[in-house]
View 1 (cartoon, rainbow, N blue to C red):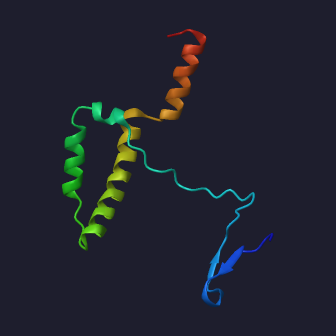
View 2: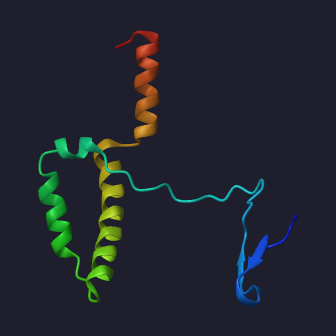
Length: 104
């Protein structure tokens, strides 16, 4: 099946449709959140998280409030991480290059 929007249909009266093989179409997806242990070594990190948590005001069910707060904390951590640690990919590459050339 090439070019079709869906590659599978099923269920009662074929009401379910899905694209099972993505083929060569690489869909850009956001990378999963990863907690970095190095954050715990930053002075005041836990207090900052606690402050952010209490600053976020959300109304709704407990599960909705939890999910919303976690999403907001994730975004704040992304910004904070770049401000404190910079671009880790570039930093790692530079460090490896220094080790390779013996400049460290």
